[in-house]
Image 1 (cartoon, rainbow, N blue to C red):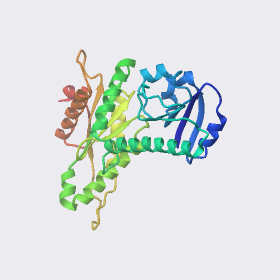
Image 2: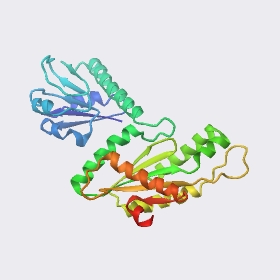
Image 3: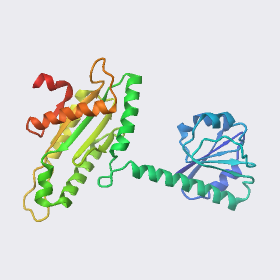
Image 4: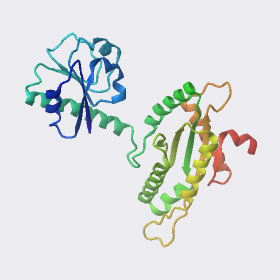
Length: 290
């Protein structure tokens, strides 16, 4: 469903009615002085009735969607948007629909490119590129509001054995099964990523280390109960997973970023592997237990 928002100084029922003839769109009219709050509505397309009244907002904001202006073309207009166009007479229904559909298509294609570039092909999870950007954002938010932020780095134990014994196809099936299980257990606000070949990294906003450990243990037990039976085998192949947890802020008086937090989770994961696998280890507890 595309969200079309008309920013206007007056009700525009005729324009609204014409746009409603387009499939799968929601159309609303909002006062033009509310344009600064566009992010709350999250429009797929903005239609602006009076470019002069929106001039300040257009110069100070970079809009992540296309804009269609009603009125004469302004060649010297300063517009920071994904794309934009002008239409002199919106009563020309055919021209209006063509221009609106073209702008919505531009938005759709750009969103698709961004989604593909941030997604792991095999599992459908977010990839490391997306993780890096989101983790930096979550760390900034955690720092601003004084909240905890936890990361769990999971690694499938003896994954190479699965590839060697049953082939890469069954290794891929196991990866997808693990990814689906992790996605199903994660909250909506969590960030689930495929971090490496058999590694998955889960970002848990507003989550303490103890609560992250509870989640990690629950997921570890769920994986341990999995029935993974490759074709031609009579018995299930036992699958286990290890995990390392880091929680921001990790260390006192240390400047930490996304790479630092991930590195601490890696250290905890390596410790879990060293101690026999099928374990979840907290970075803060490593020195106490070694």
